[in-house]
Length: 384
Ligand SMILES: [Zn+2]
Ligand SMILES: [Zn+2]
Image (cartoon, rainbow, N blue to C red):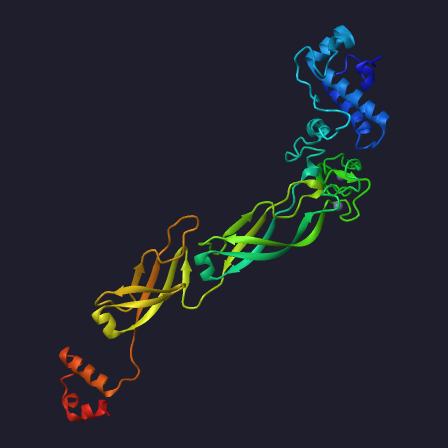
């Protein structure tokens, strides 16, 4: 003989929706299988409570039940004759895992309101693992060509003994944290102010483990040094952040892992400067080379490039060589190379060079007409 649904939930026929919900919540918490491992009686009670709530929380079904009693809703929730959606149709006594959904929804309503979207039991325990940050120094050459780096990073990994559940016996020994009722947060009031803090008992997870895994002490994760290979694409620059999804800390108790962010820093290289995707350098050439124009080899990161120096190029001129800078991340294009032209003056010349230069100066009318310079003394002086 089936018990009256109102009796099951300990309420009267006139109970309001809120009362039905809170009565259900109290009983469901008490008889939840996670709290009563292996207790058949509690399991039956839990099913009975759920069935009662399923009917009484649905206006249409409640009406049917109020009018016709159990006959009016027989077959629910299975092949129910009214075509209504059963909230726990997938649920069997062997499988309590789906109950999390009903719990999450109901307790989410009650506890989750206004707390940053936190959804109470089952949700807070699903807090994902922390993101991690790792800084690497990359050479100009590596940034030019791309590279793969191998890093050893201490991080939380899913415990292999309990496979992340945190329980010695993975199926039964978890329960909602009694201090925060699964919210992971506890509220304190002080005068007019109230504030919430991470629950000290469950450390914000919303659940406590009755018989914790000896390897990870119930956390579901263990600290380990993990070797991770990171592909660094060509074109990375100072501050580029490479995200490696899921390679952060593993989540506690089977929650999804965080991400790993590898932050790139550029090692400086003497003689070169980078600005965005452009590469800057400078070269020294002689007066005659710029005066007559020439092609010269300019050293760059990966070797040399040929740069044409136009006739008459002035000292301090910067020449642009297209597409010889750094690759532009995520494209096939490259930045440009900027070459500043400096003139070097010879510190020493041999006689042949000196004579040639004097002839040049004469031809350019650069030898002062002053008698002193025209005399043989002057020649003696410079061709000493
Ligand atoms: Zn473990
Ligand atoms: Zn707690």
